[in-house]
Each structure stands twice: as structure tokens, then as C-alpha cells.
Length: 312
Image (cartoon, rainbow, N blue to C red; front, side, top):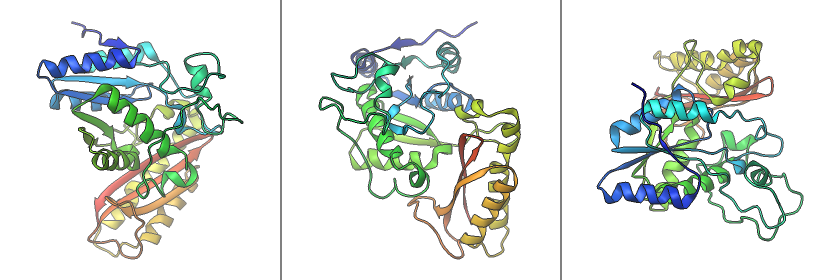
């Protein structure tokens, strides 16, 4: 027996009305924001939300403001029909699929993806005075790690998630911990701004060979797909070394991972050893602390991220 198709809403008003009706009926609303091209990691978030909440909504929206003009907004994979099928099977009740969540300005023309392309960071040489200009950002947690090479990223993430929280008005929102810094940033943002949303971080879902599931994996060539597993293997190896009872030096752990990823065919963006809650870099012996060991690397033109967190 096939699962019922979720209701699809294209406007903020429709999505908000549905959510408020669920709350009026005494139901709790779970929410899973996504950029589409869903994999088993996304599905696991929906299933977790179904266990915690009475009804679950998801969003599918490739957010332009977390991309720069040199990144992959235009080729980010999309699969609307397949995404809706997977969401139905996972038990999702509603899907918010807006054409755009920004106001690029009166002079941008077009609609949907065309409009959104003007909101990619650095895409427009001149800023339309009527364009969107309100942003949400954090001071400390959004520094370092992914923000070093993508300084625009978390401003875009925080802004779009704030908009989605205001539109969907969920009781709880579920995020994968593959994007560890993103989860911590959104968790802190919701706390600091008194948003009535519980932000839940869920474990990384991996392929059989250990590669963290990501929509960007589909962009890898067969050769780079084979090479890409070096990032998860390097992190797992370093975690074993750090928890073996011997001295666990942050600099040595970083070097170990970076060398292994490079030897496996990746171009390292960063390797960081940080405190798992504050995300501040750790130095020296990290034993006795909650550790986040995170890495980002390019395989061809595709940038992948991964991490492990543990008590050393």
C-alpha cells in the first residue's frame, strides 16, 4: 500500500495556514528543511521527526544566499518528483516548495530560480535598492571551519532558516550533524532569539563504504567517488588514534587527517580540531574534552565535508 502524497504548498501563507491548523488541533509539528535531491540521510530526519511529533513538514528550497558566484548554485542537483516520493514514504505530511524566499528587487525580472540567481553572493554588480537587505548572523560560532573559505555561508543559512521557522512555525526542527557547524549555529540562533523551536541534531548517515551521505555526492565522477572515501577513513583513523589512550595532540591529529585525504586524492580545504560545543580550536593534548574533528576537501570540483565528535 502506497503512502499518501504530502500536501505541497508554494506560498508562505499556505504553509503557515496549514501549520497553524495542525497546532489548533493540538498536534505538534516537526520540520525538516532541505535543499532537495534527497538521500537516506534526509529520510532519516523525517522519520525521526515522525517519532517525536504528530505531523511533519519538510521544505525543498535551494537557498541562493549561502552560495557565492563561484560555487555550484546553478548545478546543484534537483529532483522534485523523486523527492516527493521519498517524503511520502517517510511519512511527511506537508512540503513547502517556494519559488523564491527573497525579493531581488524591481529591476531583476523573471521569477523562481531566475530571480533567486540574483541573490547568490556576488552575482549582481549593483544592488537594487528594493532588494532584500535583512540578514541574520552570529558573531562567534559562525567563524572558522567552513566559514574560512565560505565567509558568506552562515549569514545565508541563518537568514533562510529564520524565514522558514517564521513560515512553518514548527515545534521541533531536525538537522543532520554532517553539517555540524550549521547545526550548532542554528541551535544557538534559536536560543538567542527566543525562537519557540527545539533544534535537534541527528547522527550522520553514511554509505556502505563510510562516505557521509550528501546531495553533492551525485556530482562526483566515478573516479572521484572512489577517492572521496578517503575523508571518512582519515577521520575514523584519527578518532581511533585519539581514543587509544595515548597522547592526542591536536596538531598531530590535523596533520594525520590532512595527509591521508591528500594521499587519497583530495584537495584539502581545512582540517580542524575544535571543542565540540564552542567550536573554538583546540591545541595541545585534547584528552578529557569533547572533541570535534572536522574536515572539508575537494574531489574534482566537488567540495565535501565530514566530521567525527568524541570524548578523547
